[in-house]
View (tube, rainbow, N blue to C red):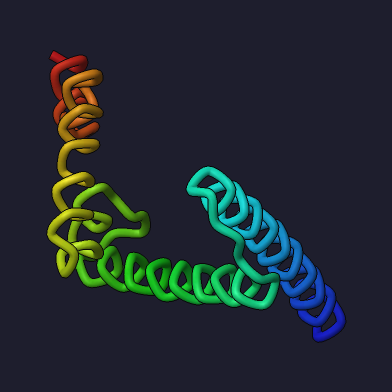
Length: 123
């Protein structure tokens, strides 16, 4: 049993490193693209630092989202958790609410609870 747990942990670590590396590469690419678009030059050290900060921030947001969902006795994160996570930044919070409302407008059925739908189908 311990061998299986160790193998699973090694696989999770490898997957986490791969995700971190992909995230950092994307952040570096975005930073360089934005700098070029604005006619700026950014040193590699600064670009790497921005990528690391973005990854650490994303990890913290993910942990917060998990805790918000857990506090609400849910196993999955929903849009309200995401909006709550961005509440300190008014601009971000407004953008998240706009996206949420747009998604709700496109799919009004998503707000219904599954239990109510199954009860209607039984009648």
